[in-house]
Length: 161
Image (cartoon, rainbow, N blue to C red; front, side, top):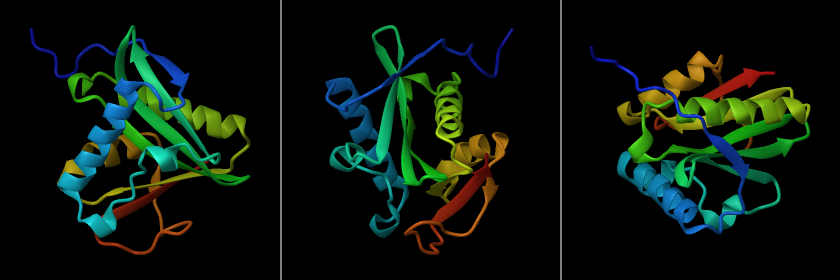
């Protein structure tokens, strides 16, 4: 009997300071993936320095001592947050990693009292799984927010909390 989706992992999602080598490598993998699928002017992924800014909270997701994914929450103001740096390790795709990390980010946004959570992702086919994930969580298409501008390579989504 074949299964279309592997069993979901039980993960430990931890606040992270981006100093552990495995985490640094996953962030680099994320940036490389963006460079492969988007023109340079349309890449909004954050590097290590930007992810360490005080308005950004970064989490890493672990299965034992194996890094399986990451995600971040950027505070735009006291009522609006942005999902950033969602990435699943290429060894752990289709195991529910992104789903659990996104739920963690949504829960934290609600805990902080945000009224809205928004994100930018790519419009290309490579980003279809991400767009589907966000839609499944109730995110809806929206206009550019914060400092973003209209871009045919970007899709903007928001979730009212």
